[in-house]
Image (cartoon, rainbow, N blue to C red):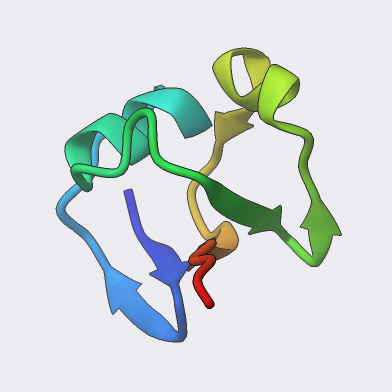
Length: 67
């Protein structure tokens, strides 16, 4: 499947793929991130049930806090 991930074309993932599964594959599972799928911000509780389709556009932002 072909997706646009953070502005770069990526073809290494196979459909069906949930947002949760993608985060696990990217090593971001359990980390605070913001996910936008096709210009729609997702809630973390929706990650397991949100499926990524061919041609999807994703933006994943790591949340960092500090002082």
